[in-house]
Image (cartoon, rainbow, N blue to C red):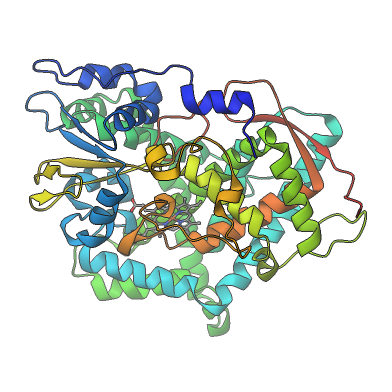
Length: 501
Ligand code: HEM
């Protein structure tokens, strides 16, 4: 399966490619090179890492505490995320950068993290969770996605598919966790005040990774640039999330026990708070806000970003799309001329080739493109590099999908077959080679849920509609979650259902 010329061009050149690592200037170090490349930070990091065979020492300005060790070496990833996990907590620096998330799961370590993880996992493994997930998904597809796509198809409207996916995942995760449907995916695509807030804050978090702390703190104090947007985003998100929590709490106080048991998310976290309230968690409201905000971040943009890249790659590779359509027809037993209306989570598991195509998308465009760690103690990495407690270690998952040493000479090609085993199932790749869902004890809790969501949405769109790309230049943004900077402009057409051969 081959990439079209333009896709290959994009992946190997991405509109401007520097051929050398940044210059290390006296006093300011490599900061000028980084600033010059902030609009293409993932490619800048990738150029440096590919050239230095997977590990690169970035020197920041003197006294700015911005020295970094960038790595995309699977042995280092394995060491940091799994083997020597206890030496690489999220730590104080991480909390400073992601201050908006407070005491949510992404920001905390040790016992509080364990409690968060245990609680969230037990809820996601609850027998009612899958039913709730399935019901919510189909309700949003039926009442939001289909009417909108049908309307666009009838009128030949040009629209942003990324925006549609962001609205879809936002409604889905909010309904699932907070039992509130913001209905952002409705006819007319209403403005939802906190919608841009998520993207603006992710942008600002990314800048904080690479700017000296004093710079972004000054911007924050002056209320300018990305920091101004972050302050506004923070306010918008709070204005959305606090009322959702209060409404649910109010409802729980006046509800019968049976109804109370139906909505378990909030209750479980209230119980957790009561166990922990001596541990400086702020008020119950703040703690619930932090908890749910982390989960909204986890579930919204990661999944919508992956879906957007997937549909772009598919449009460039029509033979992959054809194979997925045939698989859907065969595995879901669709009759001649029948549209795809509804299928269960269990049936989604049969769509192996589609699963492979989604893995392949995440290999090339891992939604969480980078992670950063600060070692507690001196350490020697498998690559031979030494890190001290002051060294920021930046793990570039984005680069890993582009390294011949990891994926072979065809690493820049979109090949779902890479993921299909000889026996026809999904080929297992170790998470330190494919860390799109992280690796080790902090592996993503929502992986299974994300695949279910992506497969259901992807299958229903692929089978019932044809997506045509508008001519456009695709640029990834420079954010922690890698999305398309200017969205994905498309038109949609209704398909004539497949006839069997
Ligand atoms: C394509 C979709 C997704 C991708 C690529 C993804 C990827 C990741 C990654 C890389 C991490 C590690 C982040 C870090 O430690 O800084 C993570 C953690 C996490 N993810 Fe996902 N995720 C996805 C969807 C979801 C969904 C739908 C949920 C459900 C709410 C979810 C819940 C979580 C949680 C709770 C954590 C924190 C785990 C911990 O720190 O122990 N994720 N995810």
